[in-house]
Length: 548
Image (tube, rainbow, N blue to C red; front, side):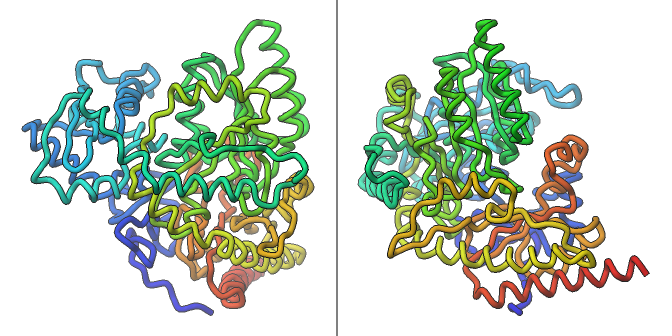
């Protein structure tokens, strides 16, 4: 059994560098319940948190310096690396969709201003009344296009040079967003996309300039979504369950979104009917988005069928392969746009955020998408972030092999317990044991001398009831945090935290509060399995005691 977790509540998970993207939510199930009931009050107590959840302390300090520089009292601001993102923030804050029917209302346009500053690098500040922060901050936390903590750190070292500049001047010097580090990062990604292809006799010919870099995984969905909205002005479809902010993004930005959350054969038929009706009535459907595998139950939708429908109805197919990861699966042939959060297993050290969108040059939409992306794409990844992710990703394949083997070992143990009717473990969700396993295996890369593909680092385990889930969670000696692909194992009560106020809605898609999502780390395999055995046996004891 591993050493007892001693990280205090709200602190960064070790090794806790300055730019950690993880936070320990505390060992007790009660903390997850509190988070689901009122996440804002819990996050307010965190000393560290995921950068999109709340601006990093360095970003907050740079924001304060900018406001102080212009003597803007009673104001708040959010910082962005481009005028494009700053304007999108203003559009979000003033949209009628900000009216939630209770205490949130859209801001009036005159309540927001965009001003530009330079310390070491140029940046844009969206300034607004401090009392309206909760409304505007939704943009920051959802789509992830603000400046990063490394951007802020670089500029805090030059506060003595802080000055206001014109918006035009801030947009002219963008060398920090295109550097040799960016190009090296693109070349690494390109090599991984092209290694061990499913069809080596049919090379995709992806070029480095087909790889677009973004500040976060969510930005790699949001930005292409906005490009297509500007061009097609159409509806967006989300097929299958996905990370919560993907659902929110497609709902909040654009005129229409459609959600097929079960990703079943029946959903395929309903999607086809939806597309057929849109064609008949003249409504434009611009994109179908899908996660492969999907968060948090690791279901693998039939992306071959989605490809067929996308082609037949002239719709863009965007596939998010973050959980499967480039090392294990090759799905770009199915996609028009392949999006990936490189914050996760690619970066691997939970200390930097980023995302990519890659265009498939053989897709039927490439000749439309390529000029669209090139016209609207604004580089926003700071050179310090690009260099960090490039450096961290050098051992990506070796880490992926360990993550795969650790997850498979723990899943094998838990799956065996689920076969016992007396066990507290009801079910395990993982691509290898899910009913959709064949959909995943169809796109696994061939084994090569340097790497054998696997099923990724994420699974979910379902306990018998809330009490056994609580006991399992409380006795599981790992950090409790929302993240995946880190060097350490993380447990997250996904449904309880994300959908506690919408449990009936979540249940129709198979999500239950008794499920706990696990992202395994790089620990010793035997020790990790033993940690789970201890938690399961405690939950089994609780179940047996309750039945006596």
